[in-house]
Each structure stands twice: as C-alpha cells, then as structure tokens.
Length: 452
Image (tube, rainbow, N blue to C red):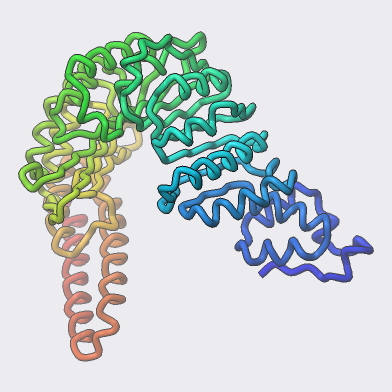
C-alpha cells in the first residue's frame, strides 16, 4: 500500500508531495483502489490526485453502484472533470416507469457534466439511453461503443461529434433503413466495428484517408440480405479500399456471403479475421472443413499477411485440434496462395509463424514454425521430422531448430512437472518418464544436426 506521512504535508517536506503532479499521477495509477482511497485522506493535494485516478475510467454493471457514483459526480466538479472513460452495462435496471424516468434524468444530468470524456460505452438498446444522450456534447470524444439502434437521435449525436470520433462500435438493429438518412461524414474515423448494414451511412470518403480496420462482428449480420451485404462491401471498396487493411468477420462457416463478398471487393487486406458462430450442433463445422472454405477466399487477397480463425459456440462441444503434420500442411498451402502470409491462427487456437532463416549470410529462406507453448514431446518428434525434411537443403538452420526445440520442450517439461508435483504416489515416476522422453528427443536433435 502507498503511504504518506500525515504530518509531512503541511510543511511540504514529503518527497512525494514535491514531485510534479504528472509524475505523482503516473505513480498513483499503479496503486490499488484501497491505497488510492487512503492517499486521498492525507491532504488536499493528495485528494485531488486520488480523485483524478479513481474517476478516470468508470465501469458499471450494478445500477446501485452507478447511482452512488452519479451523486459524487454531481457534487464534485473535480471528479466529473477527471472522467475520461465511462462504460454502462447495467444488468439490474428495474421495470417501474417512474423509477426508470428518474434514472434517465440523473444519467442525462451526469453525462452533461463530463466535459473531458474521451471513451463512452453504452451497452444498452433502450430508448431512455438515447434520450439521455440527446443533448450531450463531449468535445474530446474519440471512441463510442453502443448497442443503440441507429435512429435519428443517434445520427444527430454522431453528427455533433463527427470531428473527434476515431473509433466507432455500433451493434444495434438496422431500424435506420426506414429513415432514408443523410450519410454521416466522420473525417477522423480509423476503425469501425459492428453491423455492416450501417457502413453506407457511417463510412464516407475522407479528405485524408484514415479508415484502416472494419470489424463486422455484430450478431445482427445474420439478419442482413445478401444484396445489403454486397452494397456494403462495394461501398467500403469505393470509399476506403486503398487504406482498409484489417477486416474481421463473424458468420456461420467461412464461406458465407459476407466473407465471400469481403474477399471479392476488399482485395488490399493485410489482416483477415474469421469467426465461426454456431448456435446448433448441426453448425459445428470441423477444422478441416473451415480451412477448406478459407482456401476459397485467399486467391483474392494477394497482400494478406495475417490470417486469424476462431470459433464461438452457444452449444457445449469439444473443438478438434490439428496435429502438427496437418497444421504444417495447411499453412504451406495457404502461403502458396498468399506469398506474403507470415502468421496463421487456426480455429483450435494453434498458431504458426513463418520465420526467416539466414542462408550462408547472403540470402534467406522461410520455414513455418508453431507457437512453442503448444509443444509436447510427441508433437516435437513429429515436428522434427517435418522441419528436417523441409530444411534439409538449408543445413545452416538446423542449429537454430535445435535451440528452439530444446527451449519449447523445456517449457513443456516444467508445466508437466508442476501439474504432477501434487501427486505424491505417481508424481516422481511420471516426471522420470517425462525426463527420459525429453533426453531421447534432444539426443535425436543432436544426431540430426550432426548428420546434416
């Protein structure tokens, strides 16, 4: 706990008090809340530092805690001016109309006092939250995340902050399509996340192109017609095709309309994220099936450097894990289609990196290598066979392989030893068998290096 002598403050003899305010604030940011509260009771100057730190980033899931904080923000100008980030994700709002009306009145009053707010997250879709934002203006707002539908009230809010917003997360419903809105220009927007149905109204051509990432991860994607998806991707290509480098897509499988049309129109991508979403057991695609679908997308993405695949399940299931032989075969196939590819994460969370190895000092060659934390002795044997075969024409790299394999297997051994340490009966025997297996593998690595 951070402590300051109570008698030192009046005479300004404390070393901490004599530091510049910026340095004190950085020190206090590393302290737990209990220490900051204690520090705030020392003297007035420390109270100001504590308030700035305690109220800088606020996040609430309980309405009672949020209302208590609202009371402090209304009474304390210093606390209100310290708030830089606010997340509201309340799970216990009541149903009484009169209580909700009073709550939103308080919320609107508090929001209007947060003049230095930079990040606002309203993870609700109720009309009351939209009403509370109706008359708010935050001069420094750079990030907005909300599940509110894109109605005229939210459009007006975005218009008021068009010059400052750089990151926008809109996960709401597409009620906007009944309004025939005028498109919003956000000249400093660098990242859009949410419903691709909003793209035509939110993302416009910028005088100085800045938009670099679009994450179409809203579950409302499932409600879009294919013609809407095509219009959205064509629009993105037209207004941001030259600067857009990162796209993330959620869908059932990796060959759905959104993934297909994104790869057809957004051909300058360097990073592609694909998330398979399954609600029923019938939608539980195998890893091999998902990878086959990815191969259909890659020919349109010649500049791709990073490919990240994942799963989200709403049903209980066990994910199939690729062994190293299957994983290596797939990454080699992927990189034959996209020559610049240097990182792949499979749906089972196994990761592969393409590493550059010097060859006689004048040139380089590349070999795919898995994340070392995913090693076991059995998989290391398999990988040794694969990489020795691949690297046989490059003998100079085998010493590096030896070091990497030894480091990886060593980490694996430590993890296994910890897991078996509590087993007083079989633990020593298991550890001895692990040690023997590792020694055999490392001896084989030495033989391979000498033999090549």
